[in-house]
Length: 264
Image 1 (cartoon, rainbow, N blue to C red):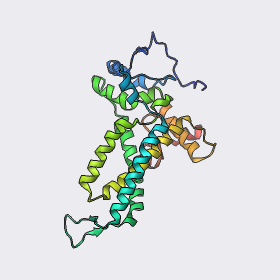
Image 2: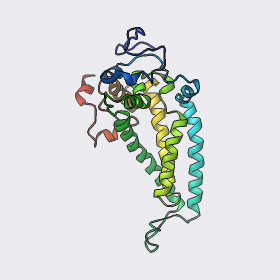
Image 3: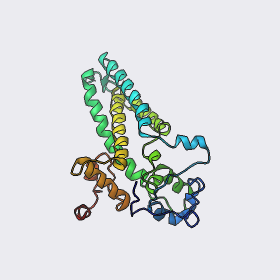
């Protein structure tokens, strides 16, 4: 891979951190220098933990994510479809039986698509408000958390082992959404939407990997999206939060400035 001129060459003896040691417990000491440092990308792998076990859990390859989540999505979808086929799921039945709406198996494709669309919004909100939070310079722990969640990716955007979300922490988040879906929605109504959400997440993770390592043909949608995401990394870190699409950047007014696209 050819070195991009926008990358910073690392001098381990002069840099603000010691690259010979795990970075996670060092970055919190950077304070007011952290924000500038984390947005000076380097082309080298990052080690986060001293523990080899924790380090392994913090990494993943794209095919491992597929191998883990595709069976989960298919099995959960089949369970939801067969449960809906029994005809016992009803909306609003807890309020009144007179106006309860029966949810049949034919609803499942619509609920699945709703889940994909819902994920696209969740993806945007997480990327913008959690991954790109601005941790106070005085907070060691918030800086450390930011680096763990997303700062590491902006520091080393082509570390191939950190371009997709590792299955173990992703499972904890998925479990939270599953419990929420079961509590808020009747029967498998919410879980059916969650099935589409898992699909949307897979699309997002695979597309994110491809935008970094793929070579889409010039003029295609993916080519334009790759340029858009590259601008987010190297020019406009406070805009362009959509990854699998630019849809939500429009209503939230976080599109990367058009004049930059014309110039390039």
